[in-house]
Length: 114
Length: 112
Image 1 (spheres, rainbow over the protein chains, first blue to last red):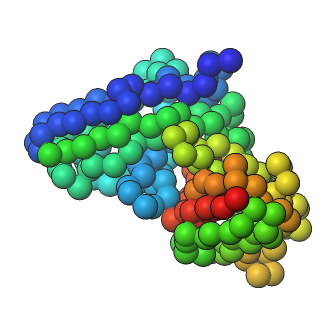
Image 2 (tube, rainbow over the protein chains, first blue to last red; image 1 turned 90 degrees about the vertical axis):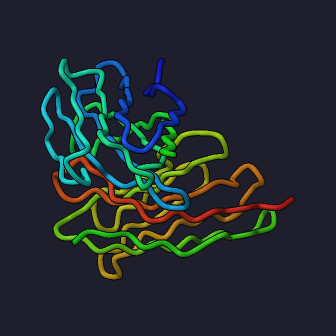
C-alpha cells in the first residue's frame, strides 16, 4: 500500500520568506509526527498530532514554526520568516495509534534557505 | 531529561564480520527502545524494537536487548553483508508519549 508521502521533495527559498511543507500519512493512521534532521544528526522531534489536535508541540523551536492537521489526515508544517538555520530535512511519520506504535517515515522534504 | 548516545562512526567492517553498535540512554520512567536504519537514498525504517526491560528485539539477523541496569540497547549482528551498509539510529520513546528521541546515528560501511 501507499506509504507516507511528503511534498515538495526539495524546497529552496530565500531568507525571510514563508514556506509550507505537506505530509500525507498512511490512510487510517491517527497519529502524525514531524521531525527535523540536520546534516550528520539524528532526527529531532518537532510536533505530534493525535487526530486533529496537537498532543505535544514541545519540539517546535520558536513561534515561527506552526503545524496544522485540520481533518485528521494531511498535515502542513508552516515556517514564517525563514532563517538560514532552518535549512534541514523535514521528516514526517505516521502511526496507527499513538504511544509506542511503529512510526512509518516519509522520504522527507529538504529545505534550503539561502 | 531524555537522551540517546551512540558510538561515533563511521564503522568499517569486512563482509561476514561481527557488528556491535553501542547505544546508551537516559530516560525517566519506562521508555520503549528502537533501532532505525536509513539505507542510501531511502527513508528511515524501523529495524527492531523492545518495549520493556530484558526484551530482545530482532530482525534481519540483527538483535538488541533492552538492559535497564546498564541503560543500554546495543545493536549486534553476527555476520554483516555489504547490503547492511547504512546509517543506524538508536531511539527511545518516553513512557506514554508518541515522540521519538534519536541518537546522532552511526554510519556502517561493509566492504566485500
